[in-house]
Length: 405
Image (cartoon, rainbow, N blue to C red; front, top):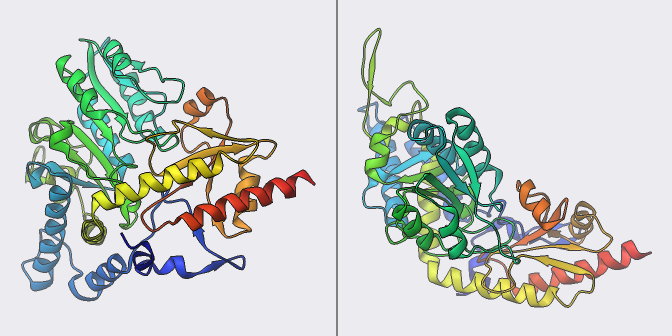
């Protein structure tokens, strides 16, 4: 993969910040957008902009074709069995809330179990807390190993015949740990439970095949995979989506309406009330084209190697603590530097043109498990280089020297 040529697709990376070349190491929060996505959005608004599934005029037909074409693109990208298994949402958070409300609150009863992990993003935690409160279900947690990973044995001990739903991240947004979701699916199904996977951090770093994983639901966001903000996806097995009730009601999701009753369209359209996120879907379809042009295998290889390089480079910095596994992690390094608050550290790095995230990363329970109130996180994508990792390390040395004075 020619990273230098790839970077030319991302105009935002050509700027300077505080007099230094921008070193953008915050792709786990939101990836940057290539010109192909920017142009796709521009072209849609300049040429095809109209509402979908309604008008029979030319623009309406073109908009509908573009919108449903994006759905087909997503279905192919994750190897869904049908385009009807792809629901467009506002993002991973909306996707998980849809399942927690439309599925869990219907299927769970008092005493049933919902199984999570302590590493989950708040978006894959709070909706299940609320579902448990509404149904009387119990939240159980798969314990973490010392390095923050999951063991299959612990999964098997935690998931029981009373478990109705298991919800886990594919890749932790703090630890970079890749969870064994295929094995978790096997265990969940053996116990009669369904598996939801939070794939927000995984879809941009390697090939996702929902049929091979055999997950029941898979949620992800467009903006983390070079697409626009405000668009996300819920993949759900067709039978499950058909059995679920919608959680939003209004135009376009209906079959028939009279003054006292209404019926719904089939999935996925019954979950897409009102005017959908048309341009966002078009932009997401363009982002998928870009990712496939680069090659998901090439992206995975690059991101694994760059993450390993960053871990090795940063381990040489005295007083720096890296959280999570040292091997097999992908896309990020989360760390603290002795005596410097992560927010101060991120501010010092920004002065050197290096953008990292600092805070609890929407994972407060995991922060408590780590024994840290907050951490800094450098996260990578295909457009990042070893030179940028070296610039991060140099920025950390500069910060150490500054705060030591």
